[in-house]
Image 1 (cartoon, rainbow, N blue to C red):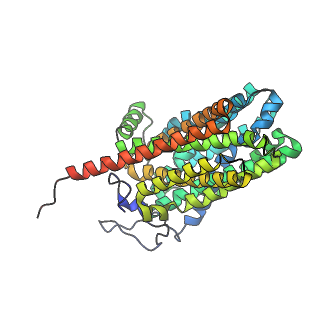
Image 2 (cartoon, rainbow, N blue to C red; image 1 turned 90 degrees about the vertical axis):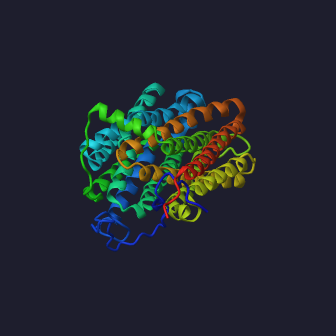
Image 3 (spheres, helix red, strand yellow; image 1 turned 45 degrees about the vertical axis):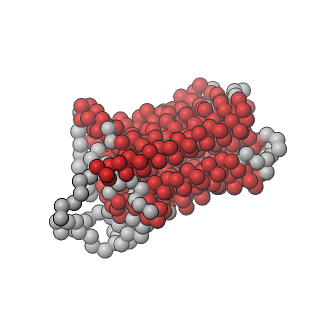
Length: 434
């Protein structure tokens, strides 16, 4: 099968195990960037893994608790869902400005500052006196976390050899899945015994430990060159990225995948508390153990692209997600769980493939390229959380599934269009001289 896109270099599809031996470029210069087995690679991988854990644990700390939040404040599912949408919306709004700061002050500096502020706000969230105050705190927390995703992928693109990039970004995305899983499982059981406020406070304490370990472990950047904070430069860089058809498609794919994921996991708690399931909060929280599937699918994205190409990997991710949505319609708990497994595996694989492609495609302004992807991604999350709750209120779980299937159809349509555009472009290339 051909490479996923002929508009970007094919080295992004290399297998996961890049050698740590000496590597030189076309001019014979030694490549001093990190590679698996080389100095600093494990520390870097674990540090960014922990950053991913903290980011997703904080960002979605209220998602598994929405039924309890609804009861405590006397609000509907769609109103309570704003505690998730506000956080992801704040991240989407601020990720681009934060990426500009990272170009000037450095990736590690901005990631550290973002974690510190987000953790501090997270320790205030349990004391929110009203749903309005809770939504406001969550929006601030999301804005603070905006400094992490784009800076992390830009750091990896600069400090890791190209053949190991998908694997490195996959490990960061795997940290996202572990954070999302552990945060929801822990909050579910803690909330069942002590209430949702103690549960989100517990997540805040865990995030403190992750933030400290992250700062101690992450190697200092060796290939970062400070950029300009001039608005004109930022606008030009963003315009250049948005004029790239491949990047635009990747941004849309990230948004659509996250719309499915955000909608499903915002509403699933309400579905499982109702008949015929009627599950307690602790058991509902444990449902999120299926995130471990996402850890595996994200971390193996490099091998998947190596075998199927980028477009083939996206087709597989979309088909897996759609299959999971259809299975989740059953009134059988085992089938619903299997559906969630497939949705999670498809989403994390698609996200890892798309996000790594963005980092590899952008030859300059990588932080802005990644920031635009993250902005689209979290706009999709915010829209999915709100629209999924509205669809659930209007048509039950079937309404949420229809919304998800339409988003997957969008992913497939965009990927098909990308395949056609790549074929047209290849035909236009002049034949090589003999």
